[in-house]
Image (cartoon, rainbow, N blue to C red; front, side, top):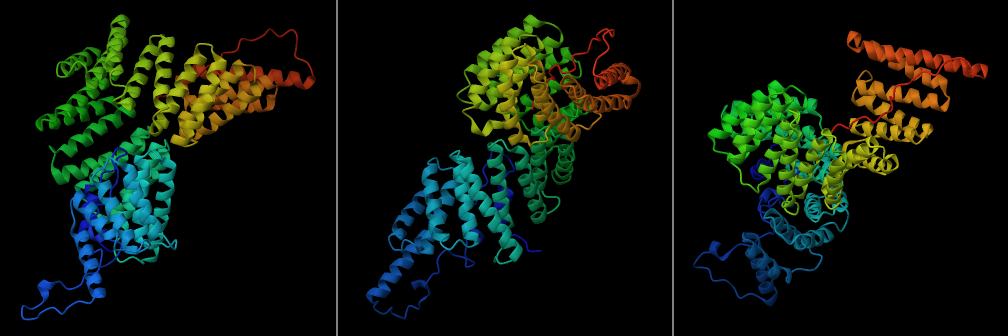
Length: 608
């Protein structure tokens, strides 16, 4: 297997798998040059190589012009600072034809340099990239220089929030690199360039809300790192942790756990128990174990992480880890311990900081669990007061905090306050295209609360919009999409539209059977709702089929579901009577009406 050149490895080792960081190709990396020679432009022997006894002949005008061009190329090749590169490019530009490949490569170098230093004028960076692409892509071929240029243009389009453009450029770069790798037609290892493209694809898809698709690219990034790096390298551990974090972000904690454990194993062996990387691994493990509802393990990992962070003097990270610990303590029912932890954090934060707002939110959660509602509401009001001042600075983080606050108001039956706050979130998120996944979640919560408070007609457009956004962000089979369809079905039943309801319940059941399993309580409830909808339509054969599934599923739960099984069996017998009566053309008049449980009431969405 070919090894990546040192400069390519240097690039790869510096990159970080995170939706918050752009992948960049350093312009100065010689092995990233589209041509095998060490320099961008071929050079002629310099005077320093000539003997002192030899006097240079008089140059003809053509030779003098050629030498001047060579000097300009050498000056551009040796330029390192931004001012030097731009000045050398301007001088070189006038000496080259408009369609000269050298000019295209020069544009690529300038664009890559500006991109690598985070140049603020993204339009200028894009202009260099598009100009390079126009020159280098003249024949539509599959060259490494074209792939690198497409990466540059895709990365810059991402910065300009032109996500569809970014995706188009990056997808083509990916196809070119796949062709080059399969044909082995490139003179150097293309895998680090492929890594950069895959990482940027993940960033762009994440920004578009297509997180499930982004996971495919992040998984490919890790595979490339595994192929290039040593098996015990620190950077490989970071790659495992970053992919684990991405899985945790879509609530797939089962996939996240082994990746994070692998990262921890690598970093412990390579860096020791007290390294910062190990601390970060343990903190993420705490989040994952919390998601898996293994709170004791979560608290253990959090405490180990805090010890390391404290020894390294990482104050900000330590404060957030302590807030995480308080939230785990709340989940374990240790409310007084959580409150004491939070008081300690509050004493170390500024009054107007976002961290102080997070402390107030967690404090409100603990107080609410102690049924100290008035105190909890005061904490939430103080949190909102801090966050309102941060809306323009950190809109994404503020909306996340507002969503959590709305959930606490909801738990205290303050539904109107919760809905109002969520609508404010939605207005903010509509201005943040990279937060589409969160927009879908907020819209779904608004729809559910409106449905819960009897405002059915208002709920439906929120739920329908949420379903579309969530499918784009998390995929069509994510359990969150199933909950939304279930709520839509409940809304249609309330509006006496059982056929529309049956369609929604069927979609919900299909998704939940795949994502949760057919014997999960929510999957069983979807089957029950489907049976009710078909019964309302008069399709008793289908209603009996799904009601039988409900009976069998609750039966598999054993004694713990005795009451649910009894109710399901009663409904099944009732349906059989209705089905027999419908076959004879009349329902027995002397049969008293049997009360039915409201099994189509809204199911609370799990927060995405």
